[in-house]
Length: 419
Length: 147
Image 1 (cartoon, rainbow over the protein chains, first blue to last red):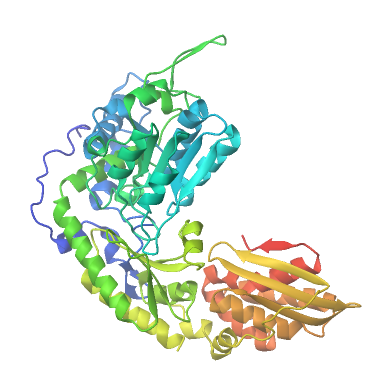
Image 2: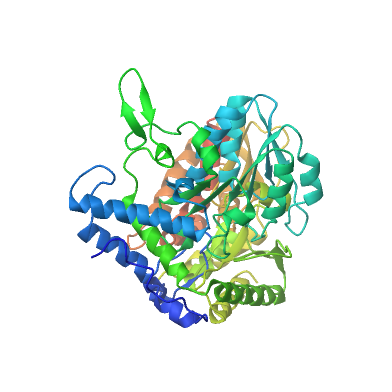
């Protein structure tokens, strides 16, 4: 096996064939409760293609060793695979270089890193952190912790009835005290695509740094961090067809250089004595301890997999399925769609009159349809609509209109039970 | 394969639609709030204990059919019983909803309609939320959670 050249040669598919894509994901032929699996929970976690499973298996069979430290061949292979995945991640989001790519445990880890390293070392009492009403708990709680520690103040931009960030309110809430603006690229609860370029531009004009939570964006949209001009961009491997436990923090190199370490340990140091420890250079300064090497290798394969797909065509396919699902759910008597932003991707949140989402989830599961029901780690979004939960059908590149038909039939079954 | 009709029996659907004792009690002797963070279910339980007898019990809140029906059935089942009897009934009910589906369980009358949750492990918390809340109320804890 040649650890570095596993990708690159595969041709980009110039059209999008969803049936061919489905064959790449072994789990999609699974049966649940005796029915074919209809997986509509990719915003929770995506399924993994054979290429990702193979890459991780190959790694453990042929290259497993610790990275950056041993002189033997396996360690060289492991290091090449690990650093290769970092380079793939950089190319995937068009980062200027690999120094700006910190490999993390996931989106939550990335946000906490920025809050505790950048935030804690720069914020003073009375400074402000600005988030939106749409955020996942992971883009709320780390800032609340930071505010408690520093005396900074958390401000929240409201959303309109459609589930879009109110840009007038955003402009009004930006103040000379705003130090950090942290917003999702795509809302996990409603699917709203936020105008992050515009948000970044306005925040920069007021001197704030900008973090974009891209967890729900990278599986659907082509992301270019240089074009967005954000200071930090975070995402998770497991929502973009890679394994769990791995994520990326992109940071502007000048900011990463100036930031103190987040955690101490092996690999993040240049030299250690009891008097003085010198830290390693970025990005290694932020990667304490032996990382999830096998997971990072799988993540690299997931990037390769996405790179072989015509992503514009895939996105057009997903949009068409979402549009179809929206229209079909809207036809159901007593249905109410939560979140009707003009720009949406991948997520359909809704309610059925007289049916608690949790009951719907059990009945859908019995019909083979996997959705998420509940508050989606976004309790403020639920509060905004005066509800406690929704039924959320979320899409990946492998979902089809036929699967939406199965969902609609299963929802009919839900209505029968609660007639 | 789990059978949905075991879970959503007529009695459960009826108690979901027309919950019994779905009201408040003015200045109850005991009260507690139950919360299931998994599904966002919230339940306010009011209990009027005189001597050691539960004279009245009522609830309000929002939740799935299983949690609402279970709360409704529970209020009917414990009204008029002593606090000790109610606690013992909870233990027996808990045993019924957590015993593996293949094994026999005792007949608890109307409460036995909830035995169907045994086939749906993630729903056991929905069926037991009201009971945990009752236990907390009787122990004078102000808030309980099934997590």
